[in-house]
Image 1: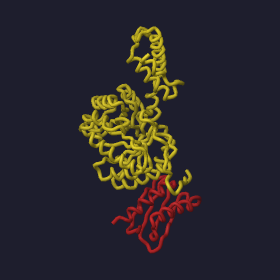
Image 2: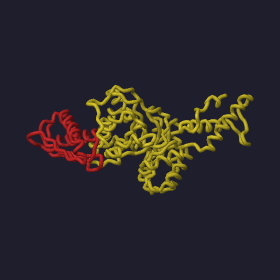
Image 3: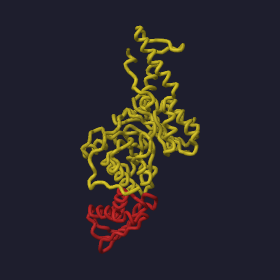
Image 4: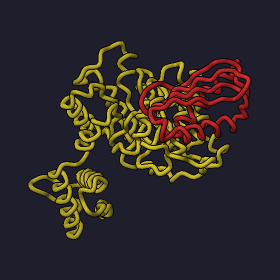
Length: 321
Length: 87
């Protein structure tokens, strides 16, 4: 690759961040101190990247990584995906410096590690507001993706999810969670079931997205696929990834299947006919179609539309006749 | 700023560079690169711009480049200078 040049001054404007409701099936971690990985970000097909200043960066290189990430983001203005930065926790010596270094380069949001309590998220919210004021950007621009990754975090995640309007979702972190529980993480994940369920309840109740943990064995794509299927079934809307090879399988699992789309289209059609007949309930293939079934069908069609699998967004009005 | 002591930053990985700075009477920039022939003048231009922005007028700067882009050259040199300035 040749030497890309940039102007003397960073240009002050970046495109507006994606909507809070944007599709986030895949959130790919990229180590913050590796130029060879950072500059590949534009070619990764993930919906979002999480540039990591925390676990991927050794203690002695925190200063180097945050400068590298800032300078990289200043050159990457025409973004092809959402860009989050995982900072170090705010109770470490690095968290605040991470924010001060990277926020001027306008990432879309911050992934906050160890969001064990609402107070921790509130502290970040306050700091982000201060930076937004200093930078002269819209208040609320920087979003927060809190990581729920300890026993305490799982207990408090319902309150955490409702802490700030900046929160775009809850991210479950199974590696740190199992460490905090002093248990082993397995490939089948039985030990995670309760925690995963609670995190997804909290996310749904707060109306935000639910992002599942990484799966670290990049060679075992079958087990990875099973895990994505499992968490999709629980209600998760996306997954953190450690390797670009996982993106395709992740998107494949989160994409609605042809049969699901077909059924959803039939449901919407059936309920439209029911409305015409003046009723809210109708039978389709011997099964009752009522409001919850229609809601599910609309969600399938919205996701299918986002995947480019159906031409038009669904007509939400059918739900209420 | 003043280069008060020896410091370095960066790695020898592909697309990265290693920058070493140390105190000296005059300012000098030495460049080793896998792509020296084509890019030495461009690497030098980035380095000189960063040194000027930091008001560095004396010191020995050695860059071992592994095909780094401008943003990485800038970031690594800035880190080396910050480390060299610390007490």
